[in-house]
Length: 359
Picture 1 (cartoon, rainbow, N blue to C red):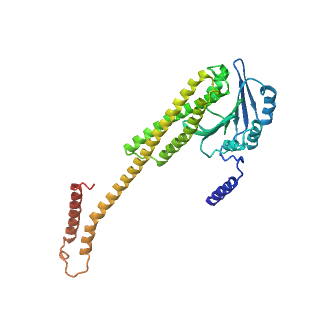
Picture 2: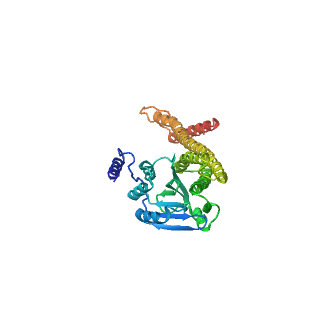
Picture 3: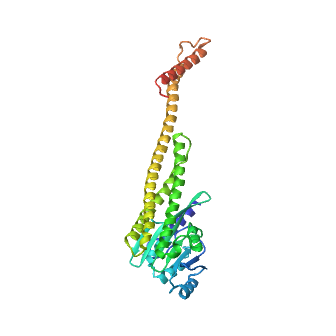
């Protein structure tokens, strides 16, 4: 079984190395059916359409939306369908290097901006059945449309869908840059919620370590992994917020306040992540220290037993010698004297160790 696994790993590795830059390869483990959810809206109306193929979407988009003044959000599920992702890239003139980042999920989060587009590649983190779920998530925005790409169905953006549907807040009155802001804002809010969950786990682990209770090293490594993942998302988020703040043409003047709030949340997220990172590192050090102390206690106990039995072994060796004339050998109580002497020696040594506080 082990040999089969190793051969599979080598085969997968060979299939993705030495490829031409810009080659699209999905290397995730959560394939899903391909689906496009299309939200188009303005202050007066909104529409929701679903497509199972890019060709069907293009026909609808060309006929109804390309020349309209509607804000458009295109949510793509199933990035494992590389051929469909390529069609989207070809139609909206998204470079192969951007598409490669979208389908290649084993990499750091990133941010890229040019004169005609903004791109963010992030991790979507949320709670599902009390477990932390992590999913690759990408946002592409040009002047006409916001396109989001995710691995599988289900996300954290239902609150935005409700705002669009029920005309809540400002979203129906704003252009695509505000929708981009809303998506990032929901992601950051979920990061902060996950941080609270991680903080509770850290406090529980800390209490267990302080009270010298058993705790698995896997718990600490899992916490470190989630914190590192959030840390890697902080920098791209900070870059995109600063980009929006510097480019006045993207947001209306009164929308700057929303970006300022997002900047505050991003800064808070960064500070909290760094603080938790330090706490988990301290937990790991304390865990290793506790393990060392436990090992020292075991070695101390073994050493004490060894020290006690060394003189007893010596006494037994002396009286076990084959000399003809040995004191006490002819006594009917010689055995009992020997046992009493051994017992007295052991008790004396234990008392001496106790006085010295060696255990």
